[in-house]
View (cartoon, rainbow, N blue to C red):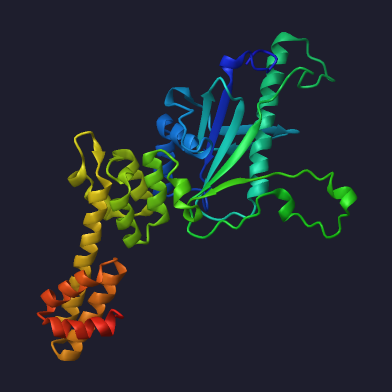
Length: 357
């Protein structure tokens, strides 16, 4: 950018990204911090945008990502307003001139149209302040001088919202939807500016769309989406080749975010020679551990009662947990026979009663 604030040439075109993690209160939890650290990596940030904007085409590379200050301060009269972004990036690319702020949400925020508009406005004011500063160094100062010249241009700003919460994102996607127009006539409504919000709701986006992202991020999104559905995770791990190898930093980030310490503990057991983690085997281990835990609880309850009634409650508990962890009917029957020393005929009775066959 030259002294006037305009872009010098196509090779100096810049794309700016800012990622914000809103949080309750002042302090962020460990899972938010780990996600911020992950996307501060230029390679991961480029992958996120390649999947989101370019639907899997590798248009941006890590070499095009540069760090930026995450603090934004804008003057309003005699006062200053400061906003913080968790991640701020500048991207040089010969095809684009944009500033993009990406808000990473973990909860539904119905004020998002106003929040996004506010962040964008502050960035525009920052650009104007920079132009004004450059003008002061090259021209005489005048009280009536505009902070911009007729030929100055601002870099356009876009805000994207990456939502990772469990509840559906049912927020209005534009400012007009949260305004009360009941006492506003159509003649006036057309003069009221609108603002659109662009959202990617991880938990409620089709798997096919998530799979358009580069492998590690695609797996991360699917793991977050199905974090409470162990059966679905096991199916995906067996079906999708992307689960064969995952970067260690991606593995640690996603399981820190989900809060599964067991997956973090077994990471070393499934590290590959290339320094990655075989996610397929790791998920299989958790899946089998879940089945084993179901057996253990069921057997323990049955033994504790000692009598027929107590044993039946133990069997009921075990089958309930096996079903929860996605165990097949045949496997459940096998575990039932082995753990409670039942004949095939006896096992059939309990399967019909508690498995629902």
